[in-house]
Image 1: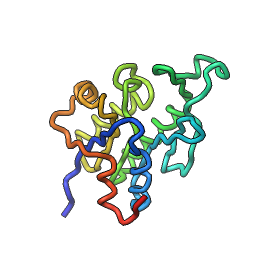
Image 2: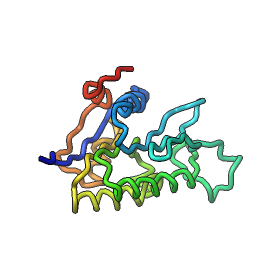
Image 3: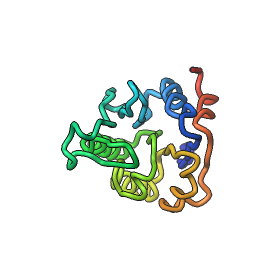
Amino acid sequence: MERPAKLTLLSDAVRSGKTTAIWHWLQDRPNAFAILMPDLAQKRKLYISSLHAIIPLEVYAPDYLQDNLQHIGRFSFLAASFELAQNELKKAFEKEYHEIIVDEIGKLEYKQQQGFEPMLHYALKQWQLKPTQEIYLVIRDYLLEEACEAYGFINPIVVSAKSLLTQTKIKP
């Protein structure tokens, strides 16, 4: 019998180990799709599981043409990296991975319609029509209420990212 699909919001404070916890959780799930945003060498990167690749994301803005960047606060991100992530996210929904995780959703997405948007919005709409996958979205604790309102999440399942580690044999 097929288990029901669900949407889970993983919410914790900044620098609380969300991405690391998810990384360990994924080690026991080779058929899950994930977009993670680890901090490596003091810059945010993108890890896309379907590509088995870590790609540059956060950059020093003066080194790039402004048309190639997306900005939020003091951070500058490569638009092409987000475009690649959006394309892979679309493929993940089409391939119907059982579990899909996106780290992380923030003001860049729901206020500026950049980052993982508009593909995230599209994918969530498709999922609502045919919810066969478990979706995990990472949202910082202080943005949770605002993000839920922006995306129309009503009474979502909200857990700590570290709680995922109780679902896997691998511990950090």
